[in-house]
Image (tube, rainbow, N blue to C red; front, top):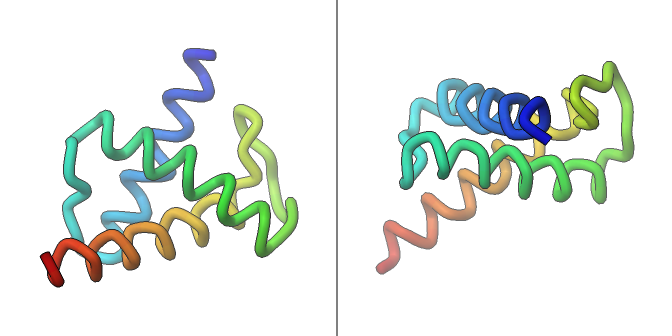
Length: 78
């Protein structure tokens, strides 16, 4: 469980770093973005690439990037 939280946080952090956007909520926001991004990425991109801590890295990262873009778009509209 702890390993999954760490990997989820790293995936969320990397996605925010790639986009140059801060994720609201700090570390907790990174973990949430990593987990939701992983689910989203696995739905659209299957489980290609290496798996670390239960996360397929490439689809999880792509899903987190998509999630952050959607959240950023919504927050700019509010």
